[in-house]
Length: 137
Image (cartoon, rainbow, N blue to C red; front, side, top):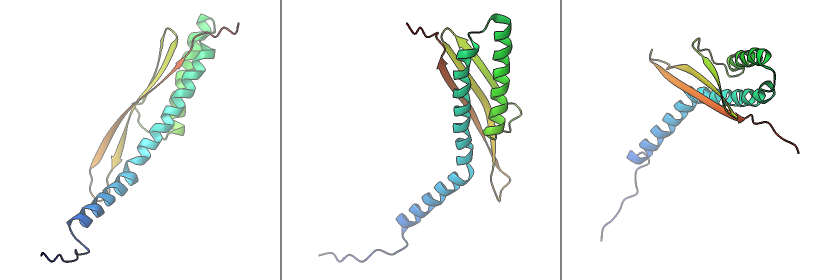
């Protein structure tokens, strides 16, 4: 019969689990804020896409001006509310039939401590809204 000994407290499995936990903590510390800001960008885009419904009912000269102002306001809200500091942030509005789609394209640079390395995260966020006229009859 084989006599098994009690495993050591610090073995390969426990070291691997500690390293995985440290890696997860580092990811949350350095990268999660960028993804959390991405959720804020999604929220701003969804609000703006819903606002296109009202703006799309205006007559043509005023409609184009209001849509352009809405795109500019959306860009300003993304910079302010989501802390996006990318100077090349682009916000686009596409109206295709009964669907309004806002798209934001931006990059976030994550700087790693101790080393001088950086990681570039590229985000393309898209939100759509139905702008079909509602008949209440």
